[in-house]
Amino acid sequence: MREIIYIQAGRLANYTGTHFWNTQESYIPYGEDDPESVDVDSKISFSESCDAQERTTLYPRALIFDAKANFGALSSDIIAEDDVEVSTIWSENLVEYRQEAISKSAYHTFLDEGGEDQEPSEEKVPRVKSGAPEKPAPPSFDTKVGNALIPEDRDSVVSWQEGQQAFRDYDKENDVMDGALRLLVEDCDNMGAFQILSDTSIFGAFTAAFLEVFRDEYAKPLSFSFPFLIEPTTASNEFQSTKAFLTEAFTLRALKEHSSMNVPLHDPTAWCESLGYPSDSIYHRSALLSSLVETSTLPFRLTRCSQDIVSIWATLNSGNNAKFAELSGVFPYTGPSDFDTRVWNVSSSSTQKFKNVTEYAHVNVSRGFSTADTTAYEQWISRPRPTQNAFYIASVHAPAYPTPSSFPVPPGTSTRPPSTTHAAPTPTMMLYSSLAASSNTASTFEKYAVFLDKLLRQPSAAAVSVMEGITRDDLKELASDLWTMRDGCADDSFEDEFVS
Image (tube, rainbow, N blue to C red; front, side):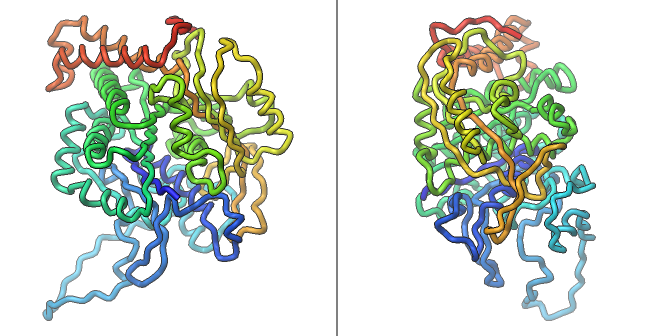
């Protein structure tokens, strides 16, 4: 077993992470389960410990960053003060002041009362920004770290210099490497990898600075990073848009240097609309993203699987060693025709397509496929591709995707009834995900490189004033590196021409 430590940074990342951890909780075996029948090794992601009352508890191996206000009602300690006798050497009278507790939502009350039906909660929007979207994750986020230096305005963009300085200031005060992170590492018997979710608009530079320090301390473990990119054109003004472009460009370069594999993700608003989800709901968008991220990384945690995190990393790097891949999928899977009509790529925007795409490798994961579905899948992947290039495909067929009551099942979607053999049954649904290394990733780097070239043609004051401390030489070097990254993903047949 090779444990994984999870890093989450930012509002969307933590919403996505909460869905992710709720799914992991669905895999935890209970007393009545046969250990041989367990599909997911929960010890890879969870640590077992005892609280002050000697109750055994599973803790996610997770380190969470966000603005302090975004942690909402999530406590930093799983033991409420009322549960522990307060002892003190002070012999005089005490005057105690308590802030009014945040009341439980109707959904949390429903869970406390043992509710298990799958009817969607009427409480559509969580009351707390980055707290649990619906059902709280297991009480094990005691390694979370709030950061008051990061602005709480969800529409803000933190510049590269601001984010880097925020991490330096935070690390100086808290010593992340020798504090929370080291505790997580030392708790592992054989720590094998890090999985990272991060919002680039606010936490891109912060996460990049963390990775740089992290690599000085831990050079060998693999890291799979999922950076959430925004569409800079949606920023509130041109200044914010420019800051977003530059911060994301610097972040992508840093990930290339410090992270083993990187899978950029875009906001799936259009996909949400096609599923009947509210397009402006971060709760629903994060659920969609989590389903694909969780499924694509499921082989990392399976007890019996021909693929693991090392082999998947090697597969995706086998074609061009670019250290970047794209994530796509079908959610929910309804039948074989979905392979031709309903595969969504959440790593590319609709304007980022090239005529001839060279595919280097795929790692595909199906959930809950029947024999007929698996046969249809095998026929689909064996079809000749337009470019006729040879590439490697690794396929993993896994149990269906669990949908706990916190997960917003798309309207009109049928879920399978829970298994009667499991002590904590959860309904499931079918889906499909694919991690792919291809020349299409070059389009992402080209978009940022072209933007930088245009910015550099402006008067020097216009370029330099955008981000204090960033010089024209810095921008030239960044543009050059992005063009190099672009060329590293492309091949001789790659056509530098967009198609709609």
